[in-house]
Image (cartoon, rainbow, N blue to C red):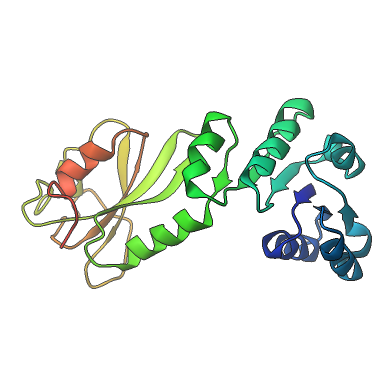
Length: 224
């Protein structure tokens, strides 16, 4: 696999190191001269100097034959532009963008730049997962497959409490894939697995069904 990475900060450099260690072909593009000179001492021919938003720089880096383009600069506008060029001009099928400001995620999605990775949102999801009473947490979005995986904590009085997995009234387009009891030790449930208060249920679903799922497991919002 040939990967072009634009942005030689900590994320881009560490990513390049790991891919090279896994014997992938990599070109890292860095636009700040001082950073480039420092990286060159380590990566040598695998790094190039230049502004990754300029076509000639991307072409020199071999974007036309890239299997994957990763834009991880500190500027969201640059990351969007780089991925748009890779996708629309050079027909690169696989792109990944770093979203520095989670408020800009909507812009990435509207422009078809997916997946866009927001470190802030990832950390927030981890915090919600670890904090008691987190309610519903989005664990994974798969926009190309039009699927989501969510985790919801079962609250007292929920319709699903005391029912078996087979008897829980889930909407079409959703499926329970795991149950994590309050005491730990998650497992793939069977049809006769009983749902209890405090269980954390993982559900794969079509986008837009979150409220229907929540109404079954946590109708009052956050779990207790």
